[in-house]
Image (cartoon, rainbow, N blue to C red; front, top):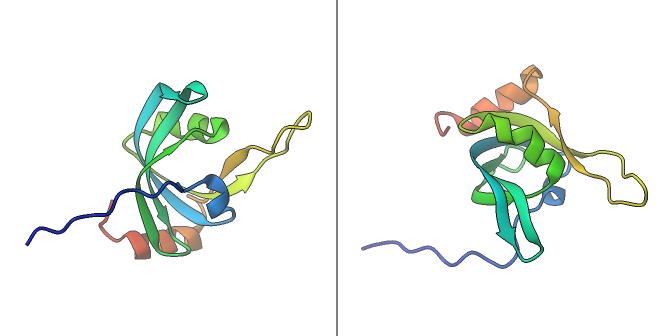
Length: 119
C-alpha cells in the first residue's frame, strides 16, 4: 500500500524557531529573485537538521538576507552553525545570522551522531 503525506501546513519553519539551536543546513539551491507576495527576493532552499531537537525539515525556503548571503555560496554542501541574531540598525529588526559551529568538536560530534550517513 502506498503511503501518502499530508499537505504542508501554512506555518513554515522560521529562523526564530531555531534561535540558539545547533543546525546542519543542507544547501540544496539558491533561488535568485524568487517571486513572493512582496515582490522578488533571493532565497536559499534547504533541508534543515535541528541537531538539538533531532528534527529534520526538508524543502525549506529562507529569505533572510544575512542567512541567504551566508549560504548561497554553499550549494551542495552541509553547513553547521547555531542560529543567532545580529544588531538591529535604525529601528529595524535584528537580522538572523549563522554562528559557525564547524570548528567546535562537541558540535561536530553531536551533528555526526544525529546525521550518521543521512547527508
